[in-house]
Image (cartoon, rainbow, N blue to C red):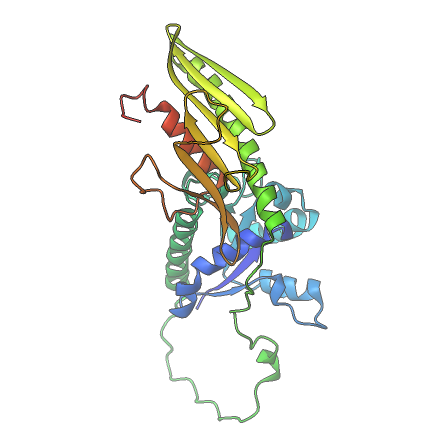
Length: 326
């Protein structure tokens, strides 16, 4: 089966873990085997182990992010060797865009990246859908590699090796499970930081989107007002008339949970809202959940990225302009 090598920055380890979860079925079916530097055993030479794998594994995943591009080892050593083998048709290189970054001018910039159109995983509304798409691309690559690597029929049967009760010393070091993930725990502080970071992301997302909305549509004017550190109001005017407005705030927990709340219109009241977002976690990452109050619960159960959460609230604001009921 094709072997898959992860080239990545340790800053992106949580995203790498989530990707590997989505590759579990491929590994169970024997379609691929995976390897990354966290599989290096105690006492092994780290650089030798990495060189051995990047020089022999069949599919090389470049997990692209700003930190990956800034890493001298990833960029100058692993990317260089990966592209040499790709050009020589000794391996298949797949750029996996984890986070927004200036990767198009990199040595792998002309390769077809995943997710589709090279959009970063963290900018997708649902990260699980992005990882599912990536897993599908890796499955296709494994099939292509299998057709490429199928040897010609032998002219005579190969001799049957003598059975041995002693494992080969050449393979002893590689005999270990690929299931080495350990569930990660997230503290209340981790969740609180993520909540405030998400609020800041949403505020910037709304401010930038309002500017673009006005630039692209005649007769549309906008107003973004930051009330305080955890509240803003966004207003859209058509020919001077207020046609869409919302307030978004992050609650500190007094009378509310620790969430992010959306209110139709301008409001300083924390007693009511039209939509709410909360921070949740699985075994590997923090994510955003929407209550789905204006979507009859259709958003419930989705693991939203910060952009997915921002896009969800932005869609609520635009409903009056797009002729949909709010």
